[in-house]
Amino acid sequence: MVYDIVEMTAESLIEAARAVRTPFRLTVRVCDGESQEERELIFRKILRLLPGKRIVALAECEGRELLIKAFLGRSASRYATREREGVEAISAAGVRTSGLLWSGSALGGHGRVLAFEYLQNATDLATMWEHAEREEDRLDILTRAVIVIANLHASGVVQNDIHLRNFLLSGGRLFTIDGGDVDPGGFPGPLSEAASLGNLGLFFAQFLSRTDDAIKTVLPAYEAVREWTRSDATLASLHEQVRAQRSRRKRDFIGKAFRECTRFVCQSSLRSYAVCERDRHTDAMQALIADPDAAIERGDVLKAGNSSTVALIELDGRQVVIKRYNIKNVWHGLGRMARKSRAWVCWMNAMLLEFFGIPALRPIAMLEKRIGPLRFTTYFITEYVEGPDICEFLKGREVNDEIEKLVHILTELRQVKISHGDMKATNFIVSPEGPVVIDLDSMREHQDESHFSRAFDKDLDRLLRNWAEEPEVRQQVGRLLAKQGLVRSSVA
Image 1 (spheres, one colour):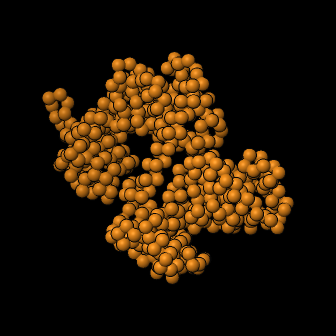
Image 2 (cartoon, rainbow, N blue to C red; image 1 turned 60 degrees about the vertical axis):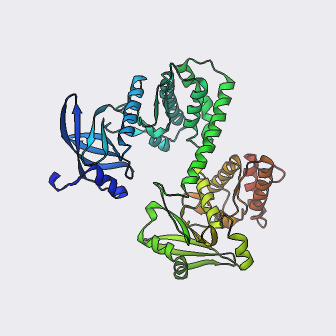
Image 3 (spheres, one colour; image 1 turned 45 degrees about the vertical axis):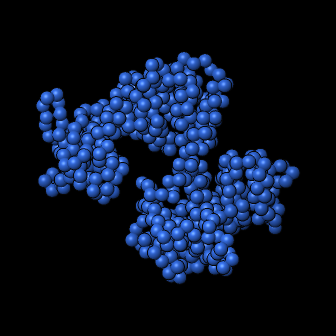
């Protein structure tokens, strides 16, 4: 019943931070000319939450479903104004957007509320992209998006957070949402070519590099709207923008993995530093972080070496792996304490592979025991990947789809200039979803092509040596590598 729903105010929503729970009621004062009225919103589902600053939610008002954006805190009015002006700019450019129905002030503190039309049965283009099986479908999605972007640019409007989730398909019509990051047409005319390509570069940089080949196919749709003459120089400039924007996005993506944010919990003190996936930061995980050695003692030890100890444990009903990087002696400890720890490097490398969409073990948490900036014993905690290594998997089998998937992984590593450093068979596990890269300690991203080529050639040589006793398998794997141009046919 409505009467059982908790009453919230702008101030209580700020205080609740991440602990906001639906359903709740929020009273809003709406001004219509000289008259004012109060409206009650029943928040049913939170779609996005930025603690103490912004809530995007599905809500009801007078029996109607609405999309609500609630801005909180002393900057609420400024952000609400930016959102409203951005939406108006999108609409003025002739691009469909969810209609702004009314705005008002949340009672009980600093809060502004914008009520938008809720688009029924809407699907964002990102979801469509994820489920697209054919290349033609993906090209159609990109073409739809770049036509909208071209119309925005033609009116001097820039969406600075341009990605597929901001395009919604509803009732066969495409809508562009999120006015908060829109520069609302402060230009005397259409956007310049340099600024246009910069924004287009940001859009295409959201995709994995394997999508870059599609740019040449869909760019003419943009050029037709802008009435540009097709030019190889324009295409080359766009590709350069994509590379630059993707590099910046990569730095931002990895940077977030080492600080408090929506995805991660970060705890830092004089004695320790820990970062953990927020949805795995349970009471059990906090107990593990407080005493990881006790968890290792209780677990099933998979490796007990001088440099590292690896244990399999159960946590919250799921199997996870803890890898402890040991300090072998005083001199080893002195050499390591002021450098980035191996756990830190593994955490960073796992995020790097995730950014590039390369299948790898999924990290959960990373912990360093410290005294101030000096690092000592460190821990890397990951999901357990179940399955045989690549050599075990191939025993008695012909080269099959799983090996082709492995070669695809290697091709992508080649494309982004990442060497693994230790390509023995045990570092490729064949999971139910396919091969997965593990043991990221020695992995390195290279800037110099010649240095990378030497390191990657060593990787491939080490990979092929896994089948030194099985020449037929080695030849089959080698032929697949040669087919992709990863090794010379004579080597294979």
